[in-house]
Length: 173
Image 1: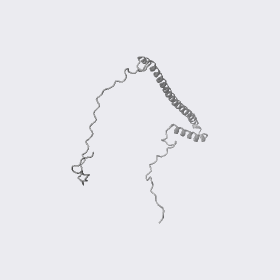
Image 2 (image 1 turned 120 degrees about the vertical axis):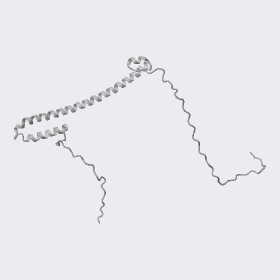
Image 3 (image 1 turned 30 degrees about the vertical axis):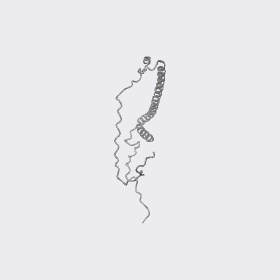
Image 4 (image 1 turned 90 degrees about the vertical axis):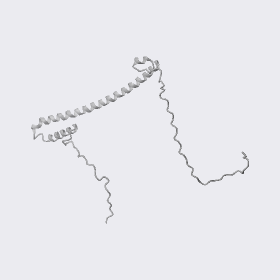
């Protein structure tokens, strides 16, 4: 009998793995995968171009297309980066503009008063005059009375006698 112990596999049924997709698979249809397939075809065909002169025009067209596709991809990435930067710049400008508008609104409100109709001339909403009206509302409901205490029942037990005054004696207090 051996002293080896068998430890149970902590993951008895591993999850099925998806097959790895390479750029040469038919299902790999992203731009970069297609470009890699074109480049592989170009590299392999360049070795045999002397024995197959009838494919030279298509080979040259494929070479030009690969160069154009790469330059287009770089231009597209630059345009995307520029667009992201433009969005960030616009957001920063809007935040800065709202901060300035808020400070100017405060200054105009200080100058003319928060309830002044002159503020509307600057596109600001004046506060309503008179402040908040106190709402009487329904009267507060009285608190409900506390629930009655449960009755305590005293169990009869042994009687303890206290000091007994003598009959006819007067209380000294």
